[in-house]
Amino acid sequence: ALREAWLGDTVLVTNGTYSPASQVYVDKGVIIRGVNGAGATTVDGSLVHRCFDLAHSNATVSGFTMTRGMEARGGGLYIQANGTVSNCIIAGNIASDTAKARGGGVYLDGGGLLADSVVRSNSFRDSTYGEGAAAYLYQGGTISNCLIQYNWATNAGSAKAGGLYFRSGGQAQ
Image (cartoon, rainbow, N blue to C red; front, side, top):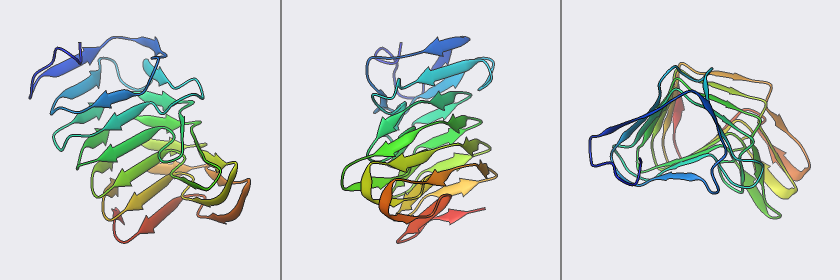
């Protein structure tokens, strides 16, 4: 459905757990919404890849649990180009890289908004340098009205911030 969507379309996803073969890459200005919210609709990265990558300024994702995602930057979610994610649960994701692991749960790159969501039990590992187990904000981005809990920095030679890490900007409200 996402491949066929046009700018401004809404893609509704029904209840269930989805384990896509690769990350859900959103490179157009569409809205992707779990019909009955994060408690009913899950994207599972199977500890192989991240769950979502938003690469369009008008991309919006709402109403999903994102779990078991793994990537060097943004284990569960990567937001670039000012995309928006709201009403989600981002839990049990890992940033893993032999050099630099950033944003176990979320990586906001140059902007973007994460709002009204829960970011819990995310981490980074297998890295000589790790930052922001819950979220890493690089050159901007906003985390608004989110619950950040039980994230941890582990298995890194230089671990910084089990919660949020801000580099060159960004804000939490």
